Amino acid sequence: MLVDYTQIEKIFIVCGKTDLRRGIDGLAQIIRHKYELNVYDDALFLFCGNRNDRFKMLYWDGDGFLLLYKRLENGNLSWPRHKNEVQQLRLRQLRWLLEGLKIDQPCAIPYARKGLF
Image (cartoon, rainbow, N blue to C red; front, side):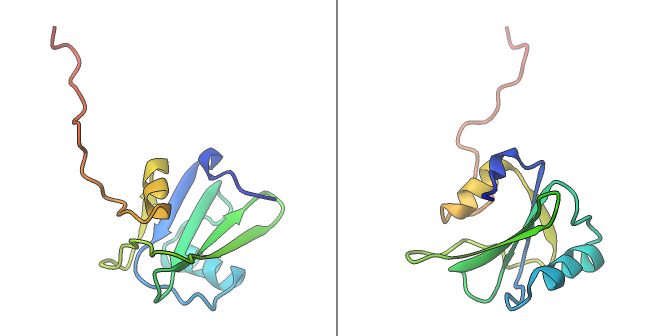
């Protein structure tokens, strides 16, 4: 089964470095015990190790866990390394991350305020 991440309710990125030798149980344990999140929610969890050209995604699809591993052949991810925390992402931030951009992009056009007329 392929995951359509555009339909997932929550997306979390584990900032910093994670030991990617961990499998489903080890990654789920990090989510449950270190960050006190429910691994059975409709949520996608992203992890990155020492190298920025590979990452893992953990997802509960209703009857089991799905563990995705990707290694980029060209380029690197702009993974946030400055914090040892988990951060919830919006869909566009995930898209930016997977395109090699930083998840915190400056807003080129600010949102307009209503009622100016």
